[in-house]
Length: 114
Image 1 (cartoon, rainbow, N blue to C red):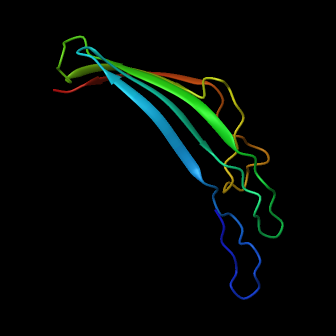
Image 2: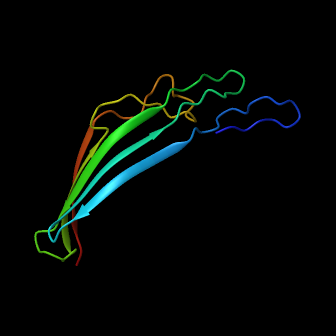
């Protein structure tokens, strides 16, 4: 993405790069599956005193397990994020050069509705 000062033609700072998420879902009576690729393009159109940021891609996967088929009152979710442990940096973060985005992550969440 690009934004510039109309008077000077200089690139503006902290403009986020193009982001994307591409995913595929599969559903059964007991389990829902999702596999996705999420990331951002590089940002090399930077303002004064701003560093460029490389692009990144994270592989994410999740499943939602329903012990009682077709009933969403109790669901167990398992989510894996950034499964390849890729390095990514948020271009609009003022701490991007010191603090990358999270690495590999696994979450287990239960949902009960009553």
